Image (cartoon, rainbow, N blue to C red; front, side, top):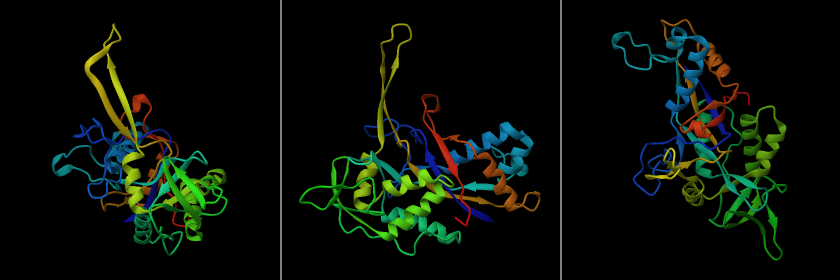
Length: 299
């Protein structure tokens, strides 16, 4: 078996829904039960990549690589490639300076670090920076685009209505450079932008942002002809904002009766993600356009 990290960069808002919600939001996004962290189900990523491969290579080759859509008795072929759920890594939050911040937390980074260790992939740093309090944050360096120097105060970062005391951290700078290489490979402009906009906050504060930092949109359905709202035709749906970053794992598992090696399986997947994919739901209203990256172990 061969495994690699995957990163997803949302170019438009992403709706990975779970059907009808029980609360105020009629169509919420998928979240982990224990942590409330948003995620894109692995089945959604696999389905989009499988569809692209089917359109380009036909049904026989698709069955060989991705298996059957439905169980077909004893002749059912297992997929040679498996995708984990893609968990939120960096959440874009509006900032008074720098337009927006890519916000994450020590717990989120520790999960990613665990994935790199399991894959025997060199990570960015041996340690994860610690944020001391709810009203403080860490920045990669002194040149961060997020910081504001307020007279008679410490260096501050303003995220939405949150006032955070900021200080630079060299460990976080190493994380920023490594993430930039993985997510924006060979694009130094965006690598520098990630370093300039990365912000590490306390785990408890990040949990708060997970519930307040997503987009909630009111939608209506109009009566054809009169252009008036249909009775009961108002609903609210939730999306992850554009510029969100998610991460996960893809695994290649060759079967003895199949001729593809694990390296050939990964190469086939890499060919399919060279251009953006449509992920999640609500594609007809512009949601779900995403870049998918599979950085190598040398990055």
